Image (cartoon, rainbow, N blue to C red; front, side, top):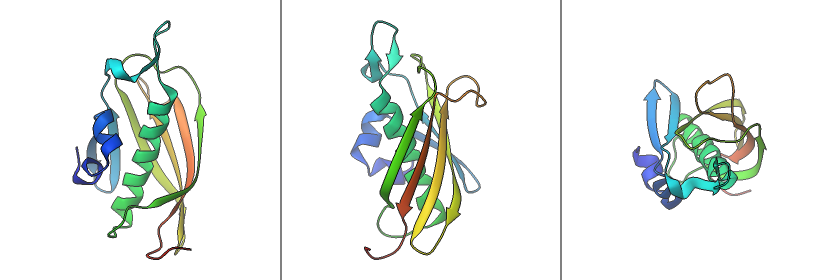
Length: 132
């Protein structure tokens, strides 16, 4: 786990692992039984998927806009596209627009095929050094 995500307790609970290529992060959430939300299917819990996407977005913003404090979410919208199967999940985020105070980030999580995401996120983060 990167030093950044290791400072976040829930990222440690999820077991998030990061891989960095230049300025692009890929985050992996290894499968664990504790991540199952629906044991009948079985399917991953939507909260763990959403948390992974948000933490991926936070980490990506922090890599491109380093500062002492982590970027703070202003608003987050998660869209669930298909059930997450009981296997590892990968995610990437990209910053679509960034200003002096706010960055808009989009992220996607997938399992087998990056072109078939299981969930997507759209969020705004505060990147300014001081509060609004």
